[in-house]
Length: 196
Ligand SMILES: Nc1nc2c(c(=O)[nH]1)N(C=O)[C@@H](CNc1ccc(C(=O)N[C@@H](CCC(=O)O)C(=O)O)cc1)CN2
Ligand SMILES: Nc1ncnc2c1ncn2[C@@H]1O[C@H](COP(=O)(O)OP(=O)(O)OP(=O)(O)O)[C@@H](O)[C@H]1O
Image 1: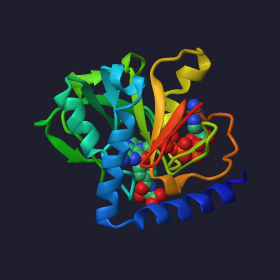
Image 2: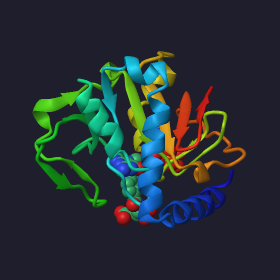
Image 3: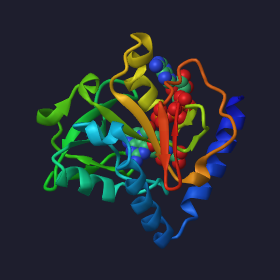
């Protein structure tokens, strides 16, 4: 897919997810948790990276609360202060002090003590703009997740498991894969779980 086409699709899908009402967002988030709870990859994971929603992304609060209640460790992405467009994953607890990053997304304020190596996460629940049923994922365009998890493809490892979270209305027929794309092994939405 041409760059211009990717950009267009991003705009359309971002607009679509932002147009959901507060009530629809809340309902979708509850449905999403309900579906995730049926999945072994979620129930068995102990160290789980997730995100705080931005720009109409499917909300994650019910999942985070459930994880805390079930003694799972939760991590959030923090923009790496030095490495270009890479992420750190930092422990998130109920009283973690937060600050906004340059995109206006909340992240833990004093990350240094609580960073966990990306290779030692069990499960990464990733934000996405668009997805297809074959593991194709379109992100916000920064390449943050692709760079941070490039090692999965390079070394052919199966940890962490990458699962996208999305509203069903973010699904498209096919997303051509770019050379640097790290495919997700599945996507969970408010309506279904797509596993590859
Ligand atoms: N909730 C959430 N957190 C996340 C991500 C994400 O997609 N969702 N990221 C996943 O990578 C990273 C941040 N990546 C982002 C990349 C671009 C924009 C963004 O809004 N870009 C603007 C234009 C650029 C600007 O304002 O400087 C835009 O496209 O409107 C936001 C986050 C880390 N944290
Ligand atoms: N492993 C990598 N090494 C170097 N550059 C990369 C890597 N992965 C992605 N990029 C670059 O990042 C840019 C954005 O990639 P892309 O449009 O696929 O991002 P995205 O998947 O939508 O975003 P994100 O991963 O942040 O959600 C591209 O220009 C690409 O060349």
